[in-house]
Image (spheres, rainbow, N blue to C red):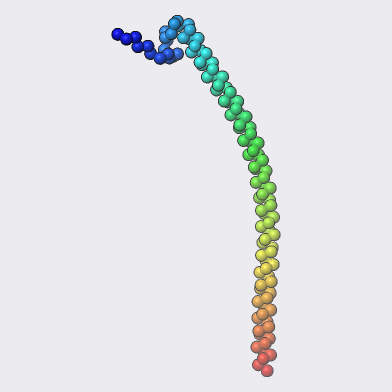
Length: 107
């Protein structure tokens, strides 16, 4: 029969030259995985801090934008009100002129 070797799996006890070597290799793998996880966690923490800083900046900019928008809205409201006052005044003057023309035109 042919010797079919199975691929190395550090989680199967007794595989490899000796049990000690297998355990040591498994421990090295776990240590490397833990170090990689710690590194990713630190990077994630840095990214979170950067995101917090950016969100604070965006929050400040949004408050500035809101104040500016409110100021512009008030300016436009008064501009609109003045326009309507002029239109109403023009209509009233036009009606008075027509009324006076009709009143004095009959005599």
